[in-house]
Image (cartoon, rainbow, N blue to C red; front, side, top):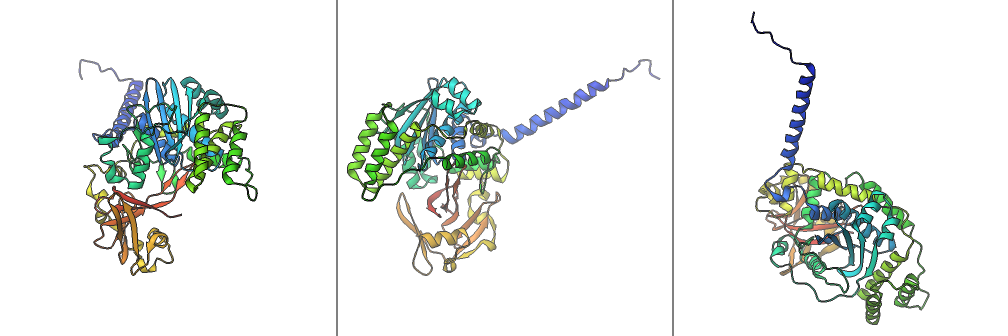
Length: 466
């Protein structure tokens, strides 16, 4: 027997050691999932977080930045059919900014439609955060100062080198619209911060979507993040609660009816920027074409949104929670993260995520072009809506370099490891089709994407399928 007595280790110390080991293991696992040498797969900073949030709302284009204590978000509202669409946009913007920039002294949200300026709303940072925390949309309305920014000034300089790679991954039409949003300098509007980042200018929208998908926040049917269902229900309820609008009487000019609605909306008030708003409406009225009527309609509905009592439901707290999920959720490693690199057209994206021919062949997805008259799959719908006559029918699209087309006998099905389906334009096809829909809790756009078959992150065109 040893002359030295052994002191037993207390059970509490064993328990504490086991707990410490479990915590350490959890930390190591978390870092294994989130730490990466590739910045594209790293957790999103404030700017990228806000842009990912607006994509989950179904907003295609936006620009965000901060300077001198102000965080500013510029949103291109997908559609303005009634006043709730406008309020949905500004509530989404303020809530996302409040979560991503919790120490900002002031927030500003600028609303555009078709890259044309409409409205800027600014508010004190503490007041916005209080309204978001209380989920009080009426309090937010009371806190912000609105300003019409309808008239445009000279455009800012081109994004230049920062957007050079954008042309490879973003369709020409979307790139032009995105740059117009980024470069706009509306009269009376707060200027964009120097560090401002724009969707499809500096960061491809498809990359943001892929990152949301890899974080488990987006699925084939739309957002899967927990608050998204409640947000969609609230947005729908707010739209249903919008008061009906009287249609023009027989023989009454549509534009004159809009001007009448504008007078009713502004009443005896004189909101900042009203003169510019009236000047643009006068200019649009003198034009009278379809684009002018659409523009006047958006301007009038925006004025009505400011004059309204407010939507019955608040989107603020749930949108803030979405932003928190976006900032915190780690990306799933493997195929989903590879898809993020592919969408960003990254040099280190593996071929298994970029070259359609390297994906798993799925003959059950094949579509013969001649049988597309009764569409049951994406290629069938696309061909029925967009193909020109011929045998086989030719699918055409427009790129920055001009017109292009494909007329394969068959669209061959492939499925990437992350589950995304692609249809190759024949065995030697230079392009493929895939679902490029933008499905958000507030706005949605169903469309197909034509992609480079060797590098499917390069989207050549979008074609609507609705």
